[in-house]
Image (cartoon, rainbow, N blue to C red):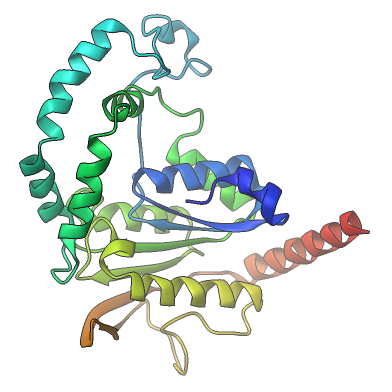
Length: 282
């Protein structure tokens, strides 16, 4: 995911993409900084995180959990982490997890495996794991971040692997119900990391979605080109070339439901943002 501090280099709002917990982070960043974000794409985003109370929202409860995932680790947490880390960083455990979450069997799991093994051997790996696991709940829940993006008219696109054993299709459909105007692509076979399993497909869909936004709808969304009518769910087979062989996945598009008022409001807000940007640049 692109860190928002990179805007100092880019100098203009960006599109951000997040997978798994990174999806939550991307959504949270957009909700907190809507003026810096042109759109958010969620790839099998984790819809919740954190089990400890947030010190701002629940200061009373947070007093019973004085450590909030910061460095250095308390001694007792460090000992517990080392025991757990020894088990989950074992190559056999990592291989088992990868076999669970990667559904597209042509993915080079060996390459992913070697990169993960290398990361687990970093001196700070166990401490970083503990920091993530013991982090308190965010000030905004996933649902609240979604609502914040919607209120700020930040476009959202969903691209979910259907065979994900962790973030199942149910979660993608829940996001779609909360943000009906979001474009939702369900990809099969693909698991928890569709950008890693079928990057060719994700790149095609992502670029097409951005082109649709940048053209204010004059360019059709991916999979909708040349269709006379759009059913509630439209499935198409997408072919791509990998290492000289033709591969394919099934991609199902769930319709974006915009009312007339939604379209008018979106157009007015978009024009307002353009005028504000032009005024600032002068």
